[in-house]
Image (cartoon, rainbow over all chains, first blue to last red; front, side):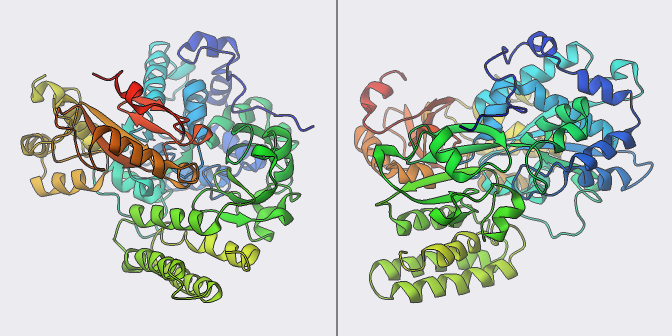
Length: 413
Length: 149
């Protein structure tokens, strides 16, 4: 029986999330204190050695991202650290669980990252609908300021930092880091062309590091215990732990933090309590709407960024939507495409026109105007075109579920 | 609260744009951004009315028309959709006698749809102002709504 291994959720249920003293009593802010006693390059080295990969979905090396932002300029007047708390990928609620239950852990991760890159200003960009998380983080920031953990010359060092919370207002797209920057600059959430990457020119044109909540919440443990400890967990290509959020036709839907390398079968049958109503497993969507369908042939594949990629699947945000036999792949695909259509910002023509076009194909299939094989090929053609010609990950997303449908469910769609 | 009092809590930086619009909307007794709200935000942030209007109309949490005291946001994302959110929406519509995007005559409730609210473990779910309500299959909506006066 697989066990949970909690790093980012270690304090969950053990401390009062609104008490900084509780957090400190559990060893909180010790990693930050240790960090400011080290040279910032040492922190970045540790982070690179830990091989931590971004938990927002893209899986880029968190250490390298820090390194690039740190090296972007030697004497910048301003650098920024941004915590991306704009969680909105369907099926994903890991960041909410961290923020509601252990806001100081995320904050400590932010402070360490800010120190590593030399940012004196840090922002939490959070979903406007996450009222409880907003409240918890606001309280955490105030308490940390009162204790002098956020402020001038923290722990007697030369490092000074300020943290502020900025609200999103209901846009999935703003979770994409370049669009997030536009939003934070007080504009409509339209994506930017990259390069330049935020490490070079981010918020207000200044070097900016943007990390996901779960990524940041992992940093304190890495700095405190060392990168060797971290790489001893998980798999070689994806070390450490990951929070998976499981929903759909499952007996115990919820969140589970486990070492990478766990299999989908273990997650569904051991931690998730198996499929609802004693039914058989039919399909799962990994990574959210911008994710991939898989069938039972992937049940025993170790969950990791690269192992899933080899199977044509993605780990993404760690969302797992489970479907039992009898579920309609058409319905869920239609729902995913409706979601994308609603969230398309309209800046890139291929995405703006392509999303309704994909739904039009679905409608034709529903009305038997075209056959299944033809419909899937048309969807694939259209979404490939969109992926190649849209600026941001939104227009590049429909190809993921559609391609995986073709791979795993060509005869059942 | 006077609008100027609301604005005073924020530095006039564009980085505070969305925070300011949220605060003005929350301060508006009809839960929306009036023309006056947008104008005062534009002048406070030293930008044009059209800029603010463009921002306010982009984000789904902002409304440019009056809304009810309580905003019901029903999640209609793939997970909730799989768990019958369509039925939930129909039942709420029937219960309140309004369509999506409309407000009840007594200005108590406005019904909106929302993307994933991150309550997937208790799908289908919705929010009523700041409260999250999950497991909406087979609930009595009338008794839920009666708690909001």
